[in-house]
Image 1 (cartoon, rainbow over the protein chains, first blue to last red):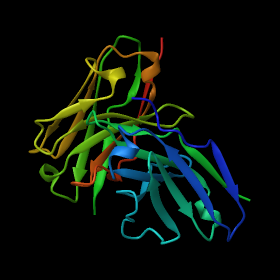
Image 2: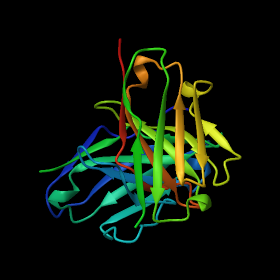
Image 3: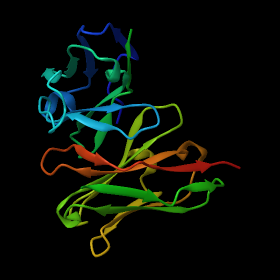
Image 4: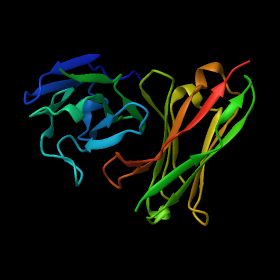
Length: 110
Length: 119
């Protein structure tokens, strides 16, 4: 049950786009379309922003989008806004019937 | 609206036990699987345990297998996590989360309860 691999930090200026990668194996990310992304602001509970690789829950802006290629999933945030500054975590179902999270990525809006 | 409220956290010594509760409201509790996820201070999220909607299927992360036990009481719309043989590395905020049926994702989260294991 090794954690998925995410970059520790990414940054971008308001209006720009950034992409966060999430690399796993064929036993998790690559084997299922059950990849989710969560946003967490300091001191707050995580919030679901993408599920099943590409789906957005109601109320999540379409600036957030997800994709997957092989064992790597990606979250793209377009038109960066100040309120997007937060920690982002990917998560996947695994062949063992468990879940695994990525280590998290701190997004800084410059 | 969906609400999940955790309770039961506190400060305990290594080897002690604790039971966490998660009171659910605003949805049909018996129709949803549930998860516990924890976050050590300053660290990332770690999935801890899963229980199916009917309580018949449970899974745990390896590091808590045999020490923690997840359960649910649908008559009380409450999820539980029994923590036994606690270790200092179990110190974390523990979140309960609702599983979005069929999607293997957590669509609603509680605010968490802090468990501190220290001598």
